[in-house]
Structure formats: C-alpha cells, structure tokens
Amino acid sequence: MFDGHFRNSVDRAVKPLGDTLRRTKITPDHLTIAGMLIACGAAVAIGAGYLSLGLLLVILAALPDLLDGALAKASNTSSQRGAFFDSVVDRVTDALLFGGVAWYFASNESPHLAILPFAVSGMSSVISYERAKAESLGLSAKGGLMERAERIICLCLGLLFPSLLIPIMWIMMVLTTVTAVQRFIKVWQQAAVAPITAARIELRRTRRQSRRSALASRRPRPTSRRS
Image (cartoon, rainbow, N blue to C red; front, side):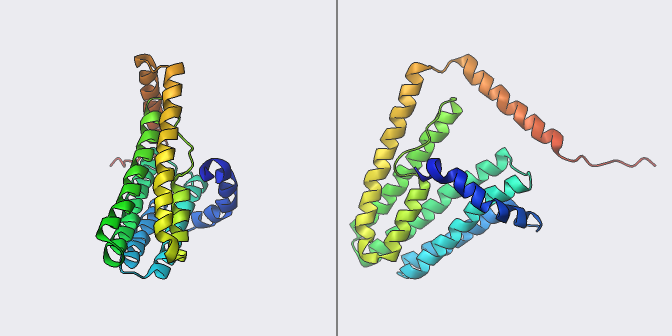
C-alpha cells in the first residue's frame, strides 16, 4: 500500500542522498549488506529482550535499504543482479527480525506464541512469491494491505510499545493473509482475461535476454597490448 502511494515521493526525497553517495566508493551492494548486518544485530537485541535497542537497529537497517536504490540510479549501476540480490536480502532480513521476535516470545511469553512470528514470516514469503511468479508470467501482483513497508512499520510500533507487540503481531498475521488473498485474486483475474501463452512467455524471455546483452555491452572491456 505504501509502496504504491508513496514510492515516487520517497524516491524524490532520497535522490539527493543518492547523488551524494555516488561520489564515494560505496556501491548499492555495500548498502544492502550493511542493512542485513544491522538487521542481524536487531534480531539478536530483540531476542535478548532489548526491545528499544532492537527498534533503533531496525530503523537503522531500513536506511541502507532505502538508499541503495537511489545510489544505483544516481550511479547508473541498476542491474538485474542487483535487484535480485536486494530482493533476496529483504527476505533474509525479514526472517531474521521475525525470528528475533519468536525467540523473545519463547523466552518471555509462551513457547507456543513463538509460532505467531514464524507464521507472519511464512505468509510474507507467500506474498513475495505471488508477486515474483506473477511477474515471471507477465502479470502484475503489486499492492495489498500489508506489504513489506507496512510490516516494518508495524514491527517498529510493537517494539516501541511492548505491551502492544502481541496484538500487533496478530493484526499483522490477519492482514498478511488478506494481502495474500488479494494478490491471488488479482493475478487470477488477470490470467482469466489474458491467458498466458507459450508465445508470450517466450517473448518475455527474449526481452530479458536482450536486456542482459545490453547491460553486458556497456561493461568496459580490458584492452590488450601488442608487443
């Protein structure tokens, strides 16, 4: 939901920061890795019961994830590899954070309650898979009530107000399930109106190969010296 309504505004806001980072030797991959490492620290802090520290680290982990795209655009280094890497790290980060919440619940609440964060994490993976599979078929599965930005915001609210962490996790579970159903219906309706054919899939594959070839042609080639 936030991604669809505020993405352009956020991109415009962080564009100057991307231009500034371009002057350094930092790459988008460096920012992505930094965000994942900070998220590891956040998961450990949450699991150990230091929720305020965990909240701070979750916010810090979100900043590199916000800036890596702006840096990639500013430095003209956007690539399929970078997009793939960023997407995979996002899934790993989510699993780490919800794993930290599960550990906290098991240590301070009820071992059975630890299943709840894992359920949210699993349903979040279903949401991401639906989008990835739909796009591989030439369809769209964006949108929904509880995308990744909303999940991070809700987690931060739960860490800020520990007494609300359990109710917030239940709300997240319900809304992620609703989002998964929303995306399923959206893709199902698109497929009914415009069924995917082998020709369309082949066309999409050809376009991907063309983009890869174009990216490869832009890479500088080493010069050879003749003696």
